[in-house]
Length: 208
Picture 1 (cartoon, helix red, strand yellow):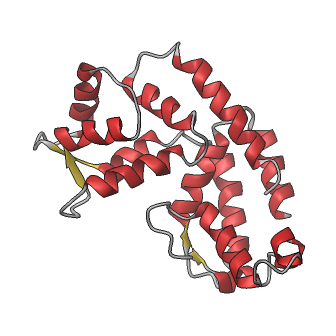
Picture 2 (cartoon, helix red, strand yellow):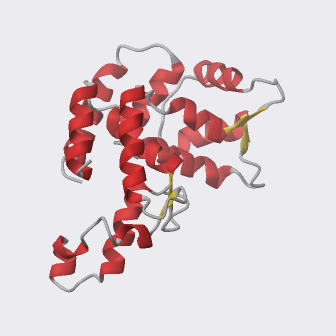
């Protein structure tokens, strides 16, 4: 995955720079997450998951503001309240945090989504909508990995670590769904200005 770390750094710098210019709470939060790299939004998801004691995938206002604080995101009290109300569509005092995270995800153009899905389909050799270690055997060569070469890791460990890049941080199960793959690349995409450059990066990385 050459280039991803560099894109992450660029994205973090751009996000921090743009933070001073935005006033919309959603955009402000999105940029604060992106300033931590492409896994920032997934990290916020993990914080919310920890706070969701009864596992109903929803948060009340108190849990929501605690989650933002615990993750180190800075919003004024009225901004947090405005944000919460925007997502509490039925006015019942709770928000679905999965929906909230999808809204935070940087939008991707149709062309970018298509190339991401092309890469996903290439990796998903069995075509069951999930990428597993079994799928990777035919498309990803572990033998070039330095830790495999020096005997530190087995082929299995190389594959698992590779999958963990894309997997949801709070639920690493060695399986990567379309949603998780798109989540990961929406973060990477945010650091790349043009569709053409993003598409070239994807086609080169995955030999599409």
